[in-house]
Length: 209
Image (cartoon, rainbow, N blue to C red):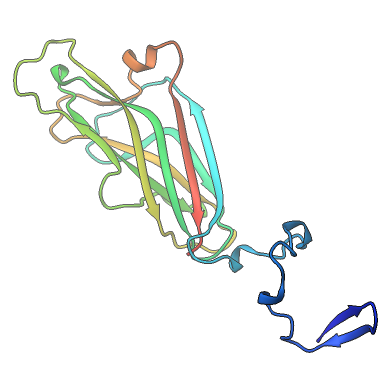
């Protein structure tokens, strides 16, 4: 039972269930009335955003690979420690620059988001790639024909973890197996040399499961 304070009768006990949510006026209970920690992450419904973590770096250094298997780009590491069990993590990497130079044999490559849990080994979040570009030239290209495009990778992860575990995300990349030259991210020239370095931003959003 709860206590009722009445100006006429004084203090009396109120039967459990007598005061329902329908009897509480709109706005009667404000956020300031709630004790710190009164609503925990575990109490929020599925689909609620529990936290957003961001990391960014200005990076004009070119990263290159000749590998047709995915390798760490080394651009940025994003760390998040989930607040609740069974959460999904939406991850994005934006702002890196994909460079293709078909006349030199660099015609394509792809990027994929990898993660580790509690310091374990990195593994791909998705089976398919998260970003990429491929050029098939239908005619002769001049030596100076090349392309720069802003990259964007996104995935929804459902990692297996224990509360307190830190999860790390990185961007991996590889060249197309049709390439005869390296695949580049943030290659010198073009968008990299427009007066400032490209800003690479990674965001992890924890969503209640």
